[in-house]
Amino acid sequence: MTVPLTTRLLQADAAAAAEAARILAEGGLVAFPTETVYGLGADATNGRAVARLYAAKGRPAFNPLIAHVVDLKAAQALARFNPKAAKLAKEFWPGPLTLVLPKAAKCRVADLATAGLDTIAVRVPNHPIARDILAAFGKAVVAPSANRSGHVSPTRAEHVRADLAGRIDLIVDGGPTPVGVESTIIACIGEPVLLRPGGLPRAAIESALGRKLAYAPSPMVGADEAPLAPGMLAAHYAPRTRLRLGANRVEPGEALLAFGANPAEGSKRAKSMLNLSARGDLIEAAANLFSHLRALDEAGASAIVVMPIPAEGLGEAINDRLTRAAAPR
Ligand code: TXA
Ligand code: MG
Image (tube, rainbow, N blue to C red; front, top):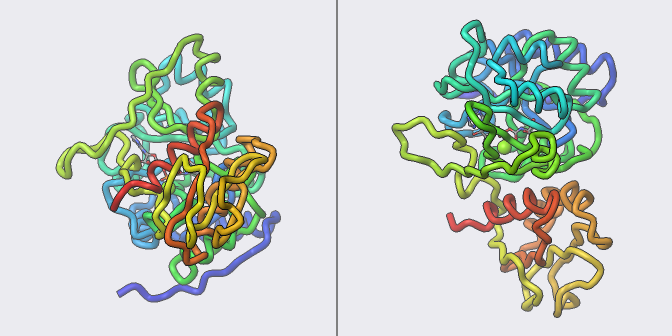
């Protein structure tokens, strides 16, 4: 049924941004870098384009998408901001923060993109190429991470090509993404609630709000009910190889995802070893997380042993992704 597309790859520059905007306006699919991970963009107001996007990703249709816009004013055309939402937006946008808000009455985003919810996730990315594309296009762009559903998020154009070549129109290559994990998602329907830890550390948000944040990872609540954060499905971020988390010993045939200066016992016999950050830097570790997982997944190991990652700062998001990746499926 779906005719394979020719997926073009352009190096990021002004001409590539203009071409991306032209393709989006025609209902096409464009992958582009944001500061967190590569996104797969479609015109948010074009239901057909959004449907093509779900198909290209093989994503369950109930999973709503984040609308990306160029500034707060454009976001206010899509969603209603209570005072705390406005405060977070002013403090952290552009940046790796997504706000889930009540949809504005005049919001023209396709229902398919919000999976029928009366809330919408919005974000103003802080990456020059994403911003150039949004400015050239002049409308909201829905963009999930540019991976096939169930695979890890792409942090390089090569990852996008490996997953989506032949299924999308254009990949704009802007090099590796600096943050490396997805945006932090906060619901601001009433009091702010953390739905997904991510690239903006929880502590920064708590200090802006002057209070602790509740964490509500909402599991799927049943097929016929609209989920609050369906992307929190246990098996969402998943390499094929089994993961063994928080381990300090490598058995023969296993691969090692190390962290810090002292590799786990038996690391010499690891089938393959990569270090998230030899100097124990969680920001560097986040930036390496998905590409290292992908690389070790190719090693043909019986398991990927992951050393303990401290739970502070970006460590919370890293551990969250690792726990999902390790969930039985
Ligand atoms: O960093 C990011 O956020 C990247 C880049 C490309 O911007 N995007 C990204 O999108 O991670 P995606 O689709 O892979 O994850 C978005 C998450 C999903 O878990 C989805 O269920 C949740 O946001 N979400 C979207 N709209 C929602 C809503 N109205 N209520 C609750 N959760 C929502
Ligand atoms: Mg994703």
